[in-house]
Length: 203
Length: 297
Image 1: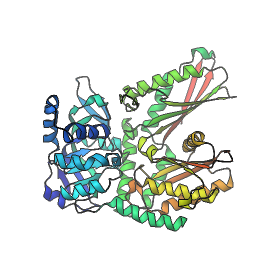
Image 2: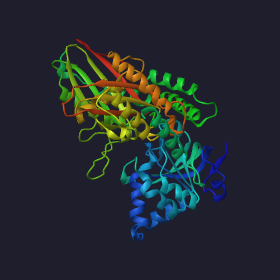
Image 3: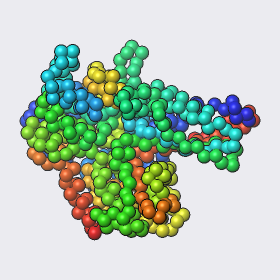
Image 4: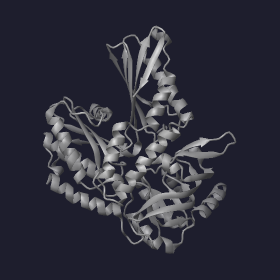
């Protein structure tokens, strides 16, 4: 099985096709509804404010060639103040459709991990950037948590544990490419096929 | 026993732990069977392999099956004389303890301020429904209903011209299949579909969720509904959406339908879409003179 390690090169992204299973390694960042809204409103739609420059610069480094994971984990806090992930499956990605393309372009993201797939705007950004959408197995939270080897830090914990941006190191995190950088979306294909079948069943 | 001293907080914590970390046997069996029906090497087969592995790991480590531990929905049957107010307090306390122990993710967010309460308690959270009965024991059913599948749950108002759905069971069949199509992979299928026909918008949604407590193998006592359940089950699986929406033969693991009386003017079909992680657990509490005796299922 092919492996990907962050930061990921354009060449590696272009070699991926919808339907491929890949194992992801390296440092990635979780981000879901609150994080995407925040990044758009504070970093992309307006100049970065002085008191948020450090956060912005950190994220710029982490996300350049990097991967965002749509995930709201269950996190254990240890006595020494360190963290570990207890359960960490993907959340539904389509809610970030309004933000994702701009975030991919602004930060030079190479991948987005989530579940359920995304829409046309994100697919276009994947083609242009290039980048890919990686589908993790929804609900497989205890299993995926075993791929999270280390929690390196957390930003915006004030959003709450699920919505914070957790910086994690993963090993052999299994994902399926469902939207590639060549304009193919497995989600669009399945939707079209099931639509035809539905028409047969209720036509 | 003196019901006034009854404190079931510990038992509620254990019930939550079981629901969050141990998938019911009928669901496991259905997932294993589904795995055998997918093409070797397919993404669908891979997804089901991962799901089954995850179920084993969660049980072994006592960690949540899914990080979205959902809305905890409690259905409590209790004898005359037990204080439901006290039981409700104990459930809330148990939810907070279960959160501390990482069986539950902090999942209750203030809708106005956006602040997470941090302990799974809040306005109308967790959900609880109390039912007085004639038994001398307490029975509690718990369902953890995740947000992804809740977002694709839906309600139709018949007739629905766009789907050719009239006010009859054929109309019900059409809209439920449409709900499965609309959900695609976003609700973490393969799904269990709880369906309520009739009622009003509120009672219909509640009834549809309550169908998810039914074991997969049970047969609807109403032969017409039993037939409809079977037909929708088979046809949903012909849609080809598959596990996670990857395509494949398994889109639904079960369909459970109930009917309610309705107003002459209304004909609602409420569809509770439940992800493969249909996390339900129950407990029976025998109230003896010298204390309580608990059994979990």
